[in-house]
Length: 397
Image (cartoon, rainbow, N blue to C red; front, side):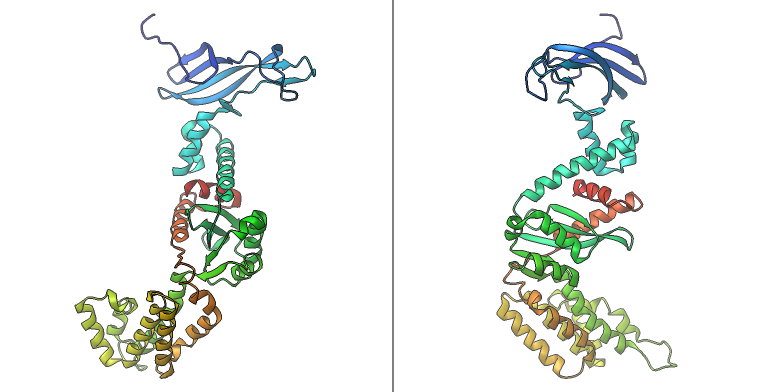
């Protein structure tokens, strides 16, 4: 063998190398053919060895030594003698205009970069890369949806900032994204559940969502047998709104005074949101001094602490006892700002109090998924196509 010369081995099963057509520093072109002598007829399944004609087809492959590689497939057009059908031979190593291994690499790269960046890296078209991503995401989604889902997590996110929302559904047992359905209304969730079928829906025992009335309607219609629970994070945010309202009222100073608000109360706004069991000695001392000057703030903080007790309790009985203690504080009339909190609790109390019986589920996995989806959205500077966003999201998660 001459110097600076080597044989080409593609490591493709049942593929024979005919010749190296182009061996340049920036390009490698190899002529290949299938090693299967008698491909089967797709109509009758009979092996056929009669060739009608041959046609060259270019197939992109993985880079070799940093050079873009193109395979020129000497593709045969066969004639089936029993049925007389003419057909083009296929090969499992090729998927359309790319090899199967290049398709896998492209999809893998699309998980960490944009479709445009993956297309430029492998010097293929954007439409080709996007089609591979969508096709593979469809396989992933189909595989995930066939599994049993005991705990279903439901939330929303946007494909563009504050525009075009999608409903995200996650299997709470595995943490896998099942689907990202366009819109965030009742029809979006109902449509997904209807498509899954009665048997799959029957296996869902617990549904966790935020306080969306649209989701509630869909869950009652399609998953009436399941236990619907509100996510703890959203409920605590509702409860904390009462304390925030009290704090804003307390920190106001009389009109014309300077400053216009009490700085000590304002600076303690984050400390007031802490649970009593999360405070150290210095923080407790600071709050005690603040409460000595503002009794209403003390009552609001105690009330929020009792509402936290709904989730800190070991069982439903303990949660009801904490709720009774909150009612005693609210009954003093010192914190009328909690009226909205009380109204919200009365409207959603079955979904809030069932948290213990449902096994203390959380929407934490889906919130983490939403964070990843927002990173994906920023990479692409927003999406306008629901299908592309769902495909990228399924691969990313």
